[in-house]
Image 1 (tube, one colour):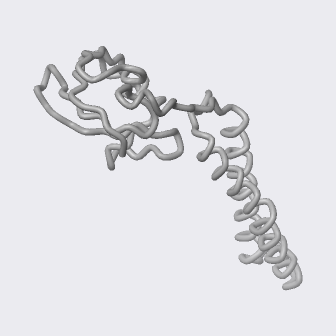
Image 2 (cartoon, helix red, strand yellow; image 1 turned 180 degrees about the vertical axis):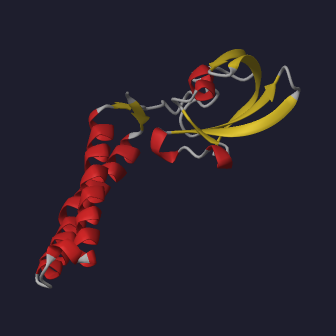
Length: 156
């Protein structure tokens, strides 16, 4: 799976990776060392908790590194302000329901559907990408197809 990310988002991921490798790993290793010093490891809760923390940290590092490795960098030219893309707030009318909603198109790591921040990889985000105000767009989703009309596009 590829992730659509801006160069800024990739930089933030790389900073988190570095933080986890340098600072968090060191803290966890110190916790493990201290827990080992308490004796019997089979009944040592602190040791088990530190091992769990280490596994979670290493898993997060692997996940973030994969996101960076598989990223498709999105760069949107400033002259295309009237085209749907990353960082745009899009006002839509769902044609079948006559409902009006506003969504912000964001990168994979910034997505939060509860806050109306949808990823470019979502069915709606993918369908809207590169369309203009006034376009009627067919959205193919796992729940079925539907049409939306782009009422307005602005930067958020």
